[in-house]
Length: 60
Image: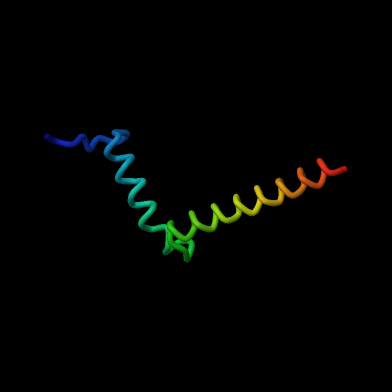
């Protein structure tokens, strides 16, 4: 089975995405894994603050 290496093919997009993710730490000083964890913790914190605000408003 031969892969399609023409510009705009799915394979070239995948190769570009993989290369982008591998070069991420050099550009940003963090790994993709750490960045995902950081984003998840911000989302969790935001959700917790929202729940606290809703709880306070419900008690009024």
